[in-house]
Length: 341
Image 1 (cartoon, helix red, strand yellow):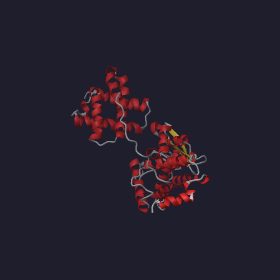
Image 2 (image 1 turned 120 degrees about the horizontal axis):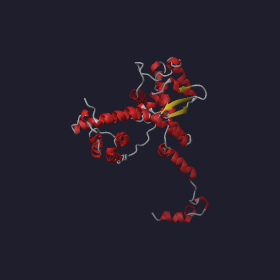
Image 3 (image 1 turned 90 degrees about the horizontal axis):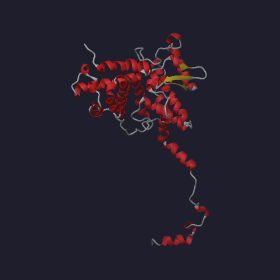
Image 4 (image 1 turned 60 degrees about the vertical axis):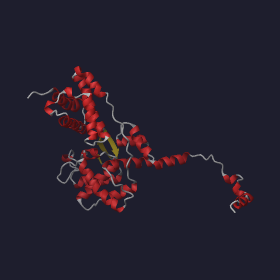
């Protein structure tokens, strides 16, 4: 069967451009793949164009806009998901500018589609007492419990994203002074996050118990499921929820109803900020590209705002104790009281 132009260029986009030229991470490639799977689904359902019949001429501004609307209206996708799908299509169009210059106007029309503004959600985080209560639910008398404690405490202590945590291998741990964990963030950007002594002790015991300290285990998944396979982000969220539910029964005021693995990352950032750690250092620990992203924690911390205002406050109202006022005038006070009689 003859390969159509869309299939040909989409294959080149994924196998040559993203993987080889750009060196995109597997997570990014997977996200882009999901975008085009959704686009093919849309074309089949709404436009009655099967995948094998798709051509580059079908990818135009009108089609893309209708696809984005379909995601939100029919698939109930969030604005953030819509924008992710648009970013993937934009990347494909940037690639196609050089692969098919005869349609350059078509690609520019799609690239002109703007991302949609969304209401920024408030930062959800746990207090220090909430973190202690949550981790305190994890039993230490079983191998699974010790894995969960190591995993969730490291998730908090390192401020890692869920995917960064499940991608960890024993070789990414440096448990001799200075102790740190190597995390690979978005775009495979590497960062080193210092580890506290208590966390190092937990990790060292876990690595030894699971025989992950041998050279042959260096590149195995650090955290595995019951079948000995690499733990997924969905698996991590499921494990976390079991302890969230238990902790919430004990103290619902400390534990919100909905907590995701990302909430522990937010919690670490807020606690660092409240301890006086500079935003620049917090940015580096979290792996943010811009300090503006990290500033959401400063905007969200009402306690820090109040303390900053109190520290900067200068009294401008005269002290009534140092001056004569009507409160010190006994005759005036008696006269005022008499008015109500």
